[in-house]
Amino acid sequence: PYPPPLPPPHSSLLTPPPPPPPSVCLCPVMVSSHSSFTLTVIAIALIAFGTAQAQSYHGNFHVSMFDLDDNLLVMPARIFLDKYEAGAGVWKPINVTTTEWAAIQEDPQWEQHYRPSTTTFWLRDFSDGGGDDTFLNQIKQALEHFSSSRGAAMDLFSHHLSSGFPVNIVTAREHSSRNLQRGLHYLIDRYGSIFGEELESKMVLQWRDFAFPLMLNYPNNIFREYFSSNSTLLEVVSQMGDCVAVNHPRWNSLHGQCATATCKGIAMEEIVDQQMLLNKKELFTGIPVVSFSDDDGNNVRAIIKAMYERVIPKYPDACFRVYNTSIRTAPPVINHLTEACDSVDIQLDIIPAHYRRIQFADKNQDNLVL
Image (cartoon, rainbow, N blue to C red; front, side):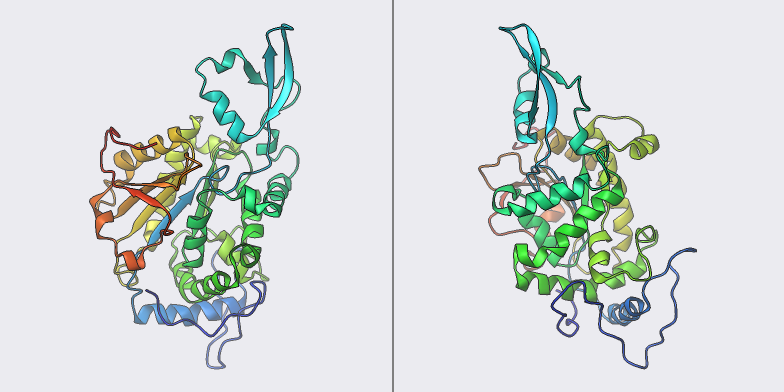
């Protein structure tokens, strides 16, 4: 679905792109008043951009968003609580996993038996209170045990990444976007060892030949905070998308306090509006596809509601999907929200073969499968 690839990539994502032909002008290209990309990166981008101007991709533009915990990875983070011991009549400190926490909250009377820790910050593993490396170290631990920590949406994440589209993280955590990006950077740096060299090579080719033209067309450049004169392809890939922690104080100061599910709907709308600006008809001839993946039923409902009420009316010709990974013993359910999903060319689609599809177009969510 994309133009012919550039020459085979180097073995490492950290290797700078090959130098451009002598005829290419190595003029500095400023992306903001205070930052610029590596000249060789810009030169390669200009070459790819020229290719993009000459032909369309004959494919679908994708905006993909992923919840993190228990969706992409089962993280080692713990939630610190007090549990009431009825026999002794006292509250005792405990810590639980996110999976255990979800099970606790299924009990309507859970607040009679559990409360946030009174001796430590109960969500300390989900914030930067323990240092800027908190999230990065958790990613490292999860990848050390990838066979057991692999989330249901990880295959979908891999498919999107290797196809050259930005991947966006929307999480209930409280980390800064920069620290979330550092963790994503580490994950992508280990991409080959996790998913295999074949997919890694595909990802490098797609991003060199496909993502750079998008990067140059991006109206509000999301890279300017991160890139420096020694930026590599790995950094471009890991920071092309957005990382949003909807409980981070800065995000709350901009959007106000809201329930996690509601906040995720707001973040989803902002990401879609931002990245749909890249959906240029001269580049993409297929149907744009917007997707969100989450393992929490409340979040799934809130995202579907937000899509129907605020996003689908703005992009009525796009395919909107919500992946529900809450049933951990079964493949994810794909909820289709718009009729356009029926017209997406299956040859150009990005869905792992083992996912099971449930057609869904009910605005009232009466037939929503959770």
